[in-house]
Image (cartoon, helix red, strand yellow):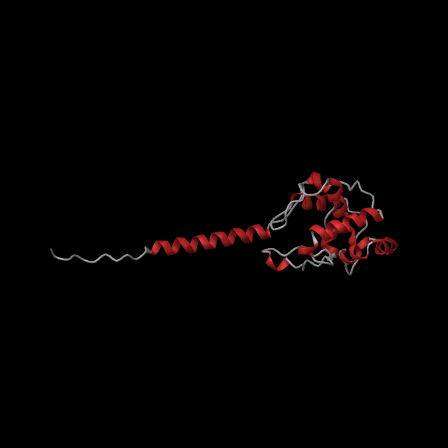
Length: 177
């Protein structure tokens, strides 16, 4: 029998185009997700922290921060913890006084409670009291009175060392909007 034209087993051109399209689509999705706002619902924005800012509450917030937040957000809250480099999205820098002043206590509580990739949700890991304590620490790290810092240093020096460092400019006193 006469040999007909040989058929080559080359993948179709369309397979390459499809792969390229998928790469662009996934990359675009990741970009859109990372740039999308992490906005708390209006109800959360209005929530008031029920925990008074006592040295005990701030100290408890510091301990929670050390256990659950420091590895990503850093020892001083700069967003450069030991795991930060492994994340697609950089952790927040709590020392940015302007950015921190734009959120209410309720928003911080909601964000920590619900999480947003790559940050995990803590609603099943911490009690509401613990969530408010660490929210208070993060939201008001720049406003912790020196007397409270000294008292906490005497009680637990490592907890104070791990607290987010104050920002260069002061944060406004009220967090409710």
